[in-house]
Image (tube, rainbow, N blue to C red):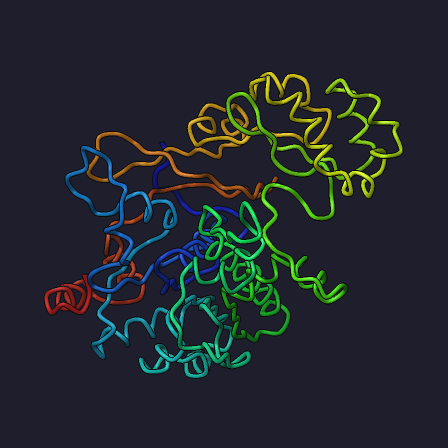
Length: 409
C-alpha cells in the first residue's frame, strides 16, 4: 500500500498552491503532484465540497471523504483557511509569495474580490505562474458573453461540440460517460502551466494561464471544425461508426461488444482474411477505405457475421495483435486484465475510517528516469495545516491561536 514518502519525480522542487475544487482543477493539480510537485490544497473551513460525495466504504464510519475526493486529490497536503477573514487571506498571500504556481477554478472575479488578483500577486512574486480553468474562460484572454455562467462537465461537453457528434443516431446527442468536460480542460491547463514554468526558467517572469472548459472540449473535437469549414456540412451523431473510416467502431459479440479499427487498407486485408472473407480483401468494391465507406453496412454485416457468434475472448484470440482491436471492458474486466496490473494502473491506498484499502486509477504518464507515483492517499481536511504554517515561519503559539480563533483548521 502506498504511504507518505519524500516527493520525487520530474517536478520535485515546484510548489503549487491549489485553490481548486470539484474535478477539473483538482485533476490538473494531481497530475503535478504525481510527478513530484509539492501541492498544498487550500480548502475552506468546511472543505472541498466533494469530500461529502460518495461512494463510501461500507465500514467507513469516519466519512472524511469518499471515492470521488480520494481519486483526484492524492499526493497533496491540506490546509483549511477562512478566506473571509483578513488574517486568513494574509496566510494565503504568504503561501503564494513562496510558491511557483497557483491554480484556481473560481468564477471570474472571485480572486479579485479577495484582493488576490494575479496582477496583485505578481507584484511580490514576479515568477508566479497563475493557472485558471473556468467554464468559459477568464476575461483577460477574451471576455465571453457567458463569462459569469457556472459550468460543469455536462455543459462543456454540450457547448464544446462533443455531445453533438456522440450518440446512437442523429437525433440523440449523448453525454460521454466519464467527466471529459472537466478532465480534458485539466490536461490542457497542466500543459499550459508547465509551458509557463519552462518560460520562467528562461526569463524569470511568470504569466497567467487561462483555459476555458468549452474551448478545451472544442479543441478535442477538432474534426467538426474542419468538416464544416471545408464542406459546409454539420456533423451529427453517427452511433458507433466513423464518417471517414471503415471499419472503425464497435461490433456485437456474443457477450458484449468489441472495437475494431482498420484505418489502413493493409489492416483491412488482414481483418478480411481473419474473419474468413479473403474475397473482400481483393474485391475492388471493398479493397479501399473510400469504397468501404460507401458500402459501410455491408462491411459491418460481414464482420458481425463473425463476431456475433463468438465471445469477446474468442474474438481476441483471432484478432488480437493482428489488427487494431480491443474488447469493450466493464470495470470488473479492467480489474482482472493483466495489462493494468503490469502498468500499475490500479493502485491501492489507505481509506481513513475503513479497515480495507481501496484502489484508485494510477499514473498514466510513465517517465523512465523520474517516474511519477502515488505516494500517499488524499489528505484529511486540514491534515497538514500545522506543518505548512510552521514551514512558513509561524510559531506554535500563533498556530494554536489561529486554530482557536477559527482562522485555520
